[in-house]
Every structure is written in C-alpha cells, then in structure tokens.
Image (cartoon, rainbow, N blue to C red; front, side):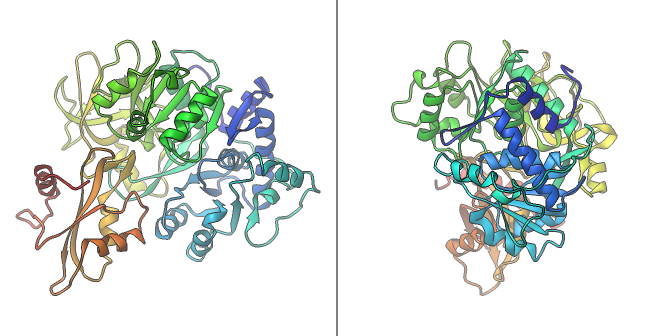
Length: 538
C-alpha cells in the first residue's frame, strides 16, 4: 500500500494540517477552507457526544449533497459512531427498515423531511435524537447567521425535541474516543445478491485502502490534490468513496452541487474548472444533449469516471471526443461490499466494453455459477468472485447471509463475467434479477412485496425493460383477483406512495396469468424475453 491504513477522521486532519487555508468545499459559491471544515467537524463531534452518541452507536444521515453531509459524516465518526447513509428519496417504509435494522440512535436530516423522521421515531425504538439542517446554513446569504450563532456561549446540553444544526455545533467539546482502522465506519445498505436490504459493514481500513487503490488507477500515481465535482448523491457508495473521501484525502477540493442538471452542472464546470468528474451514464447522455455543448466546456477535466451501470459505447465515444488530449472517460466496476471499487478500465490499454483489470491487491477468479468452487479457464463465462483488503467485514447482524456471500474468504458477486488472456474482465450478465436504472440498483423483490400488499392484486412479477435514457426501467406484470378492476395508473399511484420514485414502476401490464415452470416457479426470464420482442413505451 502507498500508506498504512488509518481512520477517516485522521485522513481529514492530515489534509487540514498540510494546507489549512486551501479550499476543502465550494457550495453555492461559498468557499470553506480545511481549517474551517475541521473546526465544524470537531464541533459536530462534540454535539453528537452531547446527544448521547458513543463508540459503536449508529448515526443516520438523511441529507442531500451539502456541507452538512460532509461535516456530519466526519463528526459522527470522530465521536466513535458508525454512520449509515440514507437516500432522501426514501419513503417512510424504506427509511424505517434501514434505521430499525441498524439500530440508529440519531438521525441528521434535512428539515424539509421532518415529518418523515418524526413519524419514523415511533417505529424505531433506538432512535432518540433528530438533528435538523437547513439548505441555507452554508449558502452565502445564510452562513453569516450560522457563524454568528456559533460565537454564542457553549451549550452543556442539547434542547429537548428536534435539534437545530447550529445548536449541535455549539456544544462544549469533550474527549474524543480512540479508534483503530479495523473499527466499523459505515453500514452501507445494499440488496447484495439476494435483494433484501442489509448493511455492509465497511471499516475505516476498507475505505482507506479503496481510496488509495482508486487514486492510483485514476491519477497514475500522482499524489496531488484532486478538484472534484460532487454531483453524484453522496449517500451512494460510489460518490462517498471515489468523490468525497478521495478528494479530501488528497487535500483537494469538493465542488458540491445539490443535484444534477446537465446545463447547470456544465455551467459550474466552466466556472470553477475542476479536474475530476464522476457520474452515471445518464449524466454523460445529458451533457451530450445540452445545446451548443463543445470541447471548451470540458477543457479543465483530466479524468472522468462512469459507473453504476454499463455505458453505451456510442455515448462513451462521443463524450470522449469532447475531452482534451490525454483526458479519458474511464469505466469502473464495483459493489457496496467492496467499498466499492474492484476494477477500472484505465491506463494505456483501456479496452472499451470491458471493466478492465482489478485494482491493486485485488484477486479475481471466474468460477462455475452452480457450485462456486471450480475455477474456469480464460474465455469461459462464470461467476466473478474476488478478495482484497477493501472487502467488507460482512452484513450487519446477518451471519447466515454473510457466510453465503463470503464463502472461503471470497466475495461472491453474483455477476457473470468472462476474462480474456490479457486479464481484462467483461460482465456478460448481471445479478439474477437486478434492474439498473439511471445508476440505481433496483431489486424486483422489494417492489413485488409492495404490490402484494394491494388488496386487488393476486400475483405480481417485476422486471427491467430496456430504456434508451435510463438503461432500464421498471415494469410490473400483475394478475388481479377475480372480479377486481385495476388500471395501470392506479397501480403506479399505489406504488408511488410506498416506494422511492426511481423504484416505482413506469410500466404496468395487467395479465390473466404469469409464466411458471412445471414446479410452479415464476419464470421471470420469459417476461424479459417477451418484453425484448415488443417495443416498450418511453
């Protein structure tokens, strides 16, 4: 390794010592130095301690991209906590499942989501504290008020009920706990290969190692500061490691954008001139569709990374034509269970259509998908398994599922891949039922469980169907109870109330029956075959 693994709070402290006056964050044109960021992180750590957080307690973050996400993440870790990040798009049902499973003690949430969080408290026995943030607190017009509030007398205790962010940062500091690299830093919730949401236990060392593995492949060993665009959602493992942690470990700068809008993101790139951009394929499609887009718009970018879903080769070619000489669009592969990166298609031998070679210190094999024990020769497809220092400790409080996916010390990805004679890997099939839509992993089982709660639905099966923009979109095939009258619109409305927008079916087909095998098992592949033969509505 390029350095000995350490804890994530130490990562930030080292960068702050090296260049305290360098910009760490830029948000809505407000600049924050490393010295200011570290001060707010230490204040947050004291606030979490005042909220009763101690070593091993779980703190949930329900935040969009904003400085509070970065500060709360490092502040909670500094207090010895384990962080679990939650999508702000989640419904009450989804958030409750994650927080109850993790045993979250504190939630830091955007104030606009206060109704969801306070309702969730009744269903999450461990959840005792709610910290609310405002999107104006770190904006140029709001930051002076926050700064003035922090000059007030320190608080010895937090007020009852939901706590304001400014009060969290005013608490009197205490002694911070000692931590070691093997401590769990994050419970990253994922469906894994089974589709049931569970927390991948990622240690400080897992993240530290993967940051260096990633930076080595993307920067060619250049240890200089990274100026990166943070427009991917920071709650997602791709952005958490490859964008936020990687930039801050390098002593670089994060340009934080609250959401992706192709034209607005392009304007931010032109104005601030970052060197790194990470996105999902639909973002690159969006850039190509901005009127008047040209090579000058991306002149500052040295490296662009795409992940989360396969990128169409035509999109890859067209976007790379806009990059300056020497800059590349690099495709990566990984999963939450390995922090997340295991492969990058980078370097002078970049081979479009493949996921490239494994990152340093990562071993890979292709084994027969049935038993997972027989290694297959070059050119023969099988299940991709891997092991390395970035692989998770296991799933939170799920010993059986951990034993299943980490058999013999190897992470069984559930993805079908093939290796060529030069050691380049290509994914030829995906996890059995996984839908990849706009960079999101969507598990049919979760949607089907919601559909089966509908009083008029007898059977339901969910598949992904091709979509020219999102890669895939969600299609639900349902069989109503005898005599029941259902419309696709009513089913979609039912799901919209219970699922995040990206999981809600866009297409609903009402059928008399669903295909089954001779022993009564649903044949999802038959639905996919039918869908591939019939053009789908956009």
